[in-house]
Image 1 (cartoon, rainbow, N blue to C red):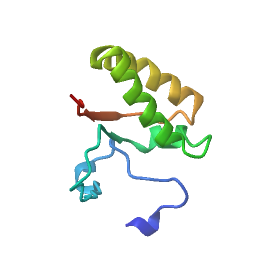
Image 2 (cartoon, rainbow, N blue to C red; image 1 turned 90 degrees about the vertical axis):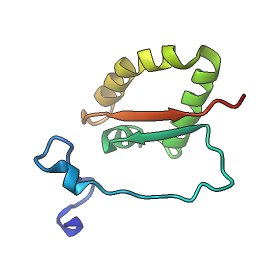
Image 3 (cartoon, helix red, strand yellow; image 1 turned 30 degrees about the vertical axis):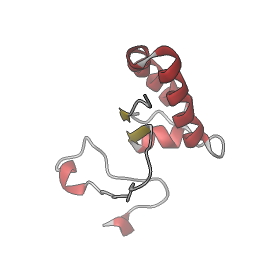
Image 4 (cartoon, rainbow, N blue to C red; image 1 turned 180 degrees about the vertical axis):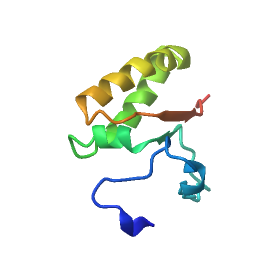
Length: 104
């Protein structure tokens, strides 16, 4: 139960039956056309907490890199960047999923 967690403790993807513990949120995006949707584990957000607004800055940085360099170089560089982020942060796993919509 949620009450069992204190501070930043969360369920882990590596725990047995983790799929049964997934929490889902749905947002109404009608009228909103996001260029980037980022899904990530708490290891990413926890490691970015060094400064206020860091998660938003991270998303804007990704969009600008995708626009400048194209999709593939950004994707190719993410594993090394996420490893570095984890090392600089709290050492937690940093799993990331991205959906990008070009604005042609």
